Length: 152
Image (cartoon, rainbow, N blue to C red; front, side, top):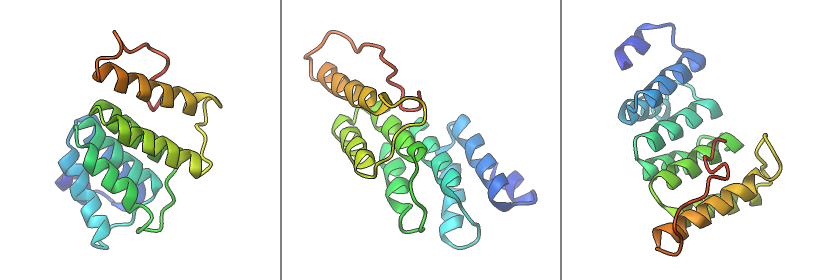
């Protein structure tokens, strides 16, 4: 995957496409390699590039790496978007990292970011995360489906 990308015209758009393909194929390590090259100054990244990397790590079960990318955005002078937080929350949900997901939701609220879809989406994410935490702790029978995917 990396060799194919390097042989192409390059640029931010194709970098984003390459990272998204890595995410779909659950090749989080290849996505991280591309992002390492961004940090080494070999490539230029955008918020979309980071979002794709966060998503790739989340899909690969690498929630800590997803959060590292999310927190590293400010160092790259890139402002996290709703999708950035959404990908981070999703990574935490998949790994049953409920406390961390709640912290991301609070951080997102503090940044005054609202999901594009509906004004209540952030509340539903918060509810889903809290229910998931309760189910994991044995305080519920099953998690209800109320639009719990962070990307929903």
